[in-house]
Every structure is written in structure tokens, then in C-alpha cells.
Length: 171
Image (cartoon, rainbow, N blue to C red):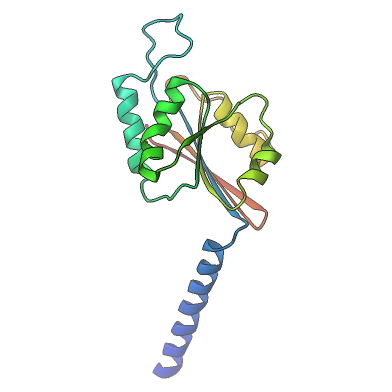
């Protein structure tokens, strides 16, 4: 009886490892991490392209620590100081150059085709980040991010055409 139990456990364990290995090596598996830029300098209301505050720079470093165990293939940012500065610590850790994207209009189909099988970080804004996530999900699920919230992390996984998403908050 013990021998049969041992065989059963070995079979279950090996089946689980096989399935996990197949998923991790599947070129049709894509994972997208979306964040909003960190806290920007609001001291000059006329400045349309402010840099991050000290608190924002610290949050950017914290994002790189939170995302430390993830090996990114690509990192995207809009062409603003605050988004590029938010992406920079993670880009440096992954030895990746930041790719600039235009948030309007978002062509989710082309983006998904160009990033298929990749793990990607996308840094945007309070309105563009949820819009981009919704475009990939093909439904209006997430609203504009509150102006005081710089801690949302949206994660989308696409495996064999099946889309799953999760929203985490690190405020």
C-alpha cells in the first residue's frame, strides 16, 4: 500500500512539473506589467513635463525591487520625464533600453503581436494605463487611476489565447 501511495505521489509531482515546464517555455505565453509613473513634481503648474520628486524617485526604486524577480524582455514608457524616470531603475537592472510608445491611439492588436511570448513592463499615466489594460482585455474593466494613487500594478497574462488579469496595489 505504501508503495502504491509513493508511486501515486511521484506521478502527481512529475505531472505538475511537466505542465509548469510547458507553460514557462511556451512562446505563446505573454505577461504584461502595467504601472503608472511615480510621484511627479507639482511645484510648477505650467511645467507639462515635470521630473519625479524625491518620493517619486524612491517609488521608482521600490518598483525595481518589487519587480526584481521578473526577467523583462521589453520595457515601454511614454515620452515624459516622469514615466521614463519611473521605468529607469527596472530597465537598468534588466539591462534593457526603454522603448517609447505613444499612448493615443493605442493599437492593442499590433502591440500584442509585437510582444507575443515576451514579459513586458509598460509605464504610463493615470488615464492611459487603465485604457491600455482595457484595450488588451477587450473590455472596460478598469477606471482612471485616482491622482493620489501611484501604486497600482496591473498584471495581464496571456497563455494559449486565454487572458487573465490581476490588480495589485502598493500604496
